[in-house]
Length: 195
Image (cartoon, rainbow, N blue to C red; front, top):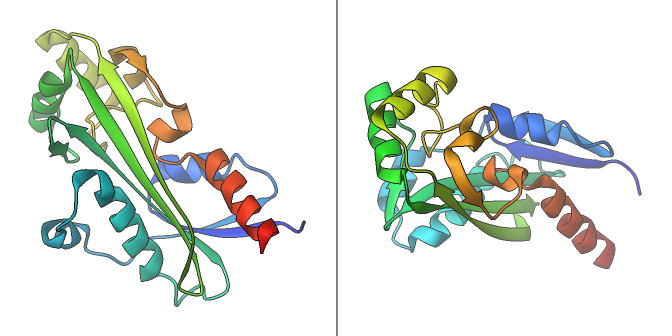
């Protein structure tokens, strides 16, 4: 089989790093042309389906630029007690989020859509349960200084030092970091070979 060409509709550095680890796949990266906050505000479905909806919109937003390519849209949310934790953007908000998560189990829900010629080729949802350790205020502040997780939806960077905040997780590191690329590629190759 010739080299698979995939366009990743994402501006995430960690997703790009994951995708670049795979040989046999030529990845192009393109920032999706969506207003995520407006999409979230107007969304009427369930929390669990929100990442798939956003992933689909991201993929469709760049489909005209890459009409003959496989377009992969991705999204992930951090959900606790039916509340979505947004990227904190400030240290005080990151501290508030980590205090909420400390000692509890939350979910990272990922949505992934592969499109080609405006057709859905693949749709995938992942749910990872993450049990965080009980943390003191000092431990939380020290962690924020260490990893500066202000652009991370759960206010932690699992791929850096955030893994040390957890008692248990039930998903792969790729899934936690927002792109289970191995699983996506296996399913995509399967779909292609069956057509």
